[in-house]
Image 1 (cartoon, rainbow, N blue to C red):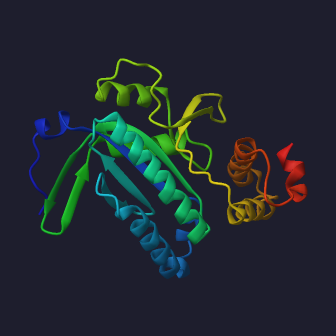
Image 2: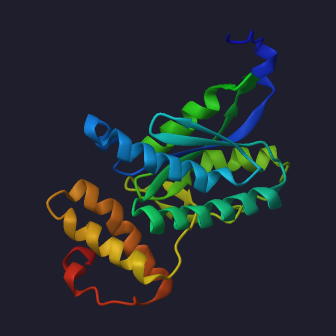
Amino acid sequence: MIPNISPSDISNNEAIFIWLDILGFSEALEDGKSYEKLHILLDSFLKTFLSDKRYDLQVISDGIILKIDSKDPNEIREIFEEIATKQFQFILKEKYFIRGGIAVGSHFTTRDGENLFLMGNGLSRAVKMEAKVVNHAVIGTNDKVMEQIRSACALDEDDEQFGLKKTVNENGDILYFIDFLQKDIDLENMLHSQLNTNKENPIIQKKYLWIYRYYINKFGNTNRPFDDVLGVLL
């Protein structure tokens, strides 16, 4: 049974929401024969992020929503760092990249037995952030949300980034993102594979191209030659 909700239950209950989406997952849902494989993948996705008790988690269709109630800037920074670690672990294990949006909004959460009810504008804002602002294969947000997080933490500093990196998206707008990259030969092989596999699909290829360029910029060199993708890197 869906519980009764009063406006005050939602209006004074703000949190950070992070929508996580497995790249390529939604397309695979169109193929009914892939459901079993996708269920296994989503279960792995869930278990990867389930171990941290500092946020609530719920699976919604082909993604996961995380809800962070903390207003402690140090704890928020630590949670973002932990998400980066889990993101990297999942990518190496399952060979799928993750994209996501970070937003601030109100919500109502309650349980009725084993059923979890979660609603509010925070969830929809995080989904829209991922779809409209985060063009790259990262978990990110924009200036407005960063200001909202600082305000929620009662911070006067306007340069606190909570450990997020700052760049621009495809439209030239400011983008803050969780930097999950570690120097790893398996990750390099995955990026090479995606760049070559998607040669005929530039819209998909550029999502991985940005990550590869950032990887080279961050670490200065790679464990393997990148002659086979040099043309798209330049």
